[in-house]
Length: 279
Image (cartoon, rainbow, N blue to C red; front, side, top):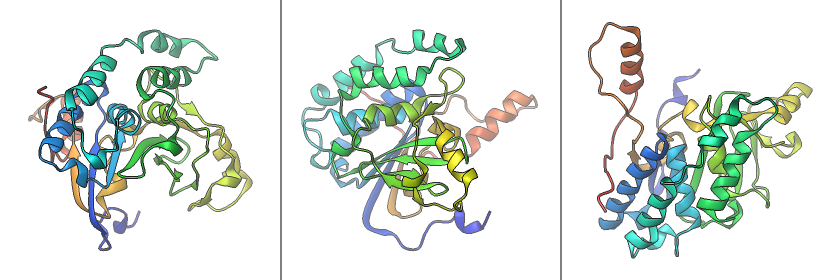
């Protein structure tokens, strides 16, 4: 893989400010709620041009794109009533227990059930095509066919391997949040029944094998690929903020294999913004 894949681009989007919201379940959702509160207090929230998210971060991103009385570009007036209270209420729901049990039942698709729960309790039937244009809300999932970051956006969805397509008019925000947060092994990968002819501009050359892979592709938690959700913003945004609510353990010298694995996992993270909701 060429080094350029990992380097920041010299062509930045003028006046761009990107915020990434990491994975980490409901803990991360509430952690990011505190980050959003602080950015709102500092009047930085209206300056955001992109909000990129993964898993627990996508739960909050889905709320912000669907439920606020006005787009984030206007800031949040009554934060407690408009954001803190409804997000806390959602996180107090037990929407995953019975869905999690379905993971061991053959023939069930509990990630589709997860999308329905999000639609009912979080995003209230909002369509991806109807979310605000500014800032851009990007929901990251993992394309399990090619192992790359798939992005759900208002106008286009796709990844650099299979290409991009116009966002279907009937795709819900809840589906994007579910695809971003269906963490294994509790939730099975989500299938979207994609049409390979509608995805264009990808690196994979046209072939019957490509078309077969796209028709059968499934999507898993975005954290399988990048738990910080940085890829959509870190190369071409002038300012990058990352709210990392996914860290569980401090990095410490250890000789056991589990500790080494945790240390390696933690060492790849860059914490640029650490806040907790204090409302």
